[in-house]
Image (cartoon, rainbow, N blue to C red):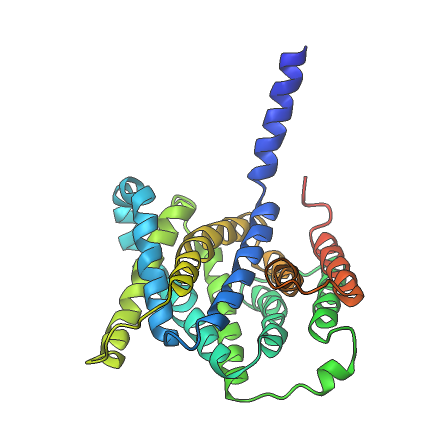
Length: 309
């Protein structure tokens, strides 16, 4: 009887770890760290160079684990080369280059404010392109999560929103949000026979290929950036944890619950940003941060009510 109970508990633990909801939450956490590190590296490495080396290293890491299935699915990849190329060009090459350019001239506060528009754009895009319905409960969840994210970004005061100033960096971030929306919708077209890890590796390769000529042109004659040991560790975090791992978790979650519902997990990023600031910078957690986090989680629960088992 004890062995049966332990087996069921073990099975339940494995199911929890494999949950797309946990995976999407972890992806949001890892990407929050990417914003922190990307902002810290802005003076040591150019945005395009940062993104190029990020995904070059990330591709090498992915290839270690996916070489055999990548070769086995080569014909399927060739048949869907347009989709693979578009995923690489949008999700890997364009989106994060826009983010790193934005972070050189705009604050993280403004960047997060624009980032929380992504779930709204994705929900509208999923309805317009795939006729994916948005139920009243999901609309309520979107609104509640957005309210929580705005509460975090405004630091608990409406004046925090009215005193924001937008410039060129904010326009780059808005462009990145639009590109991310396209990437999320393209994931809906993934062939069922193509494993997530294989598609991620292939699209990473196309993303690096898209960046390579631009990188070589912009870096022609320029010496390689001299990074400190802390910056190298930051680049390694971005290249491994916030790239292959986070994207694999995100793509798997999108495949299971759809782009519009998965996109609400982006609302967790302001909450995780506050948490990371408390852990690594020693900044105390304020009341508005706790309230905003509760609203974000409540909104996600409303969006996915009745679906998570």
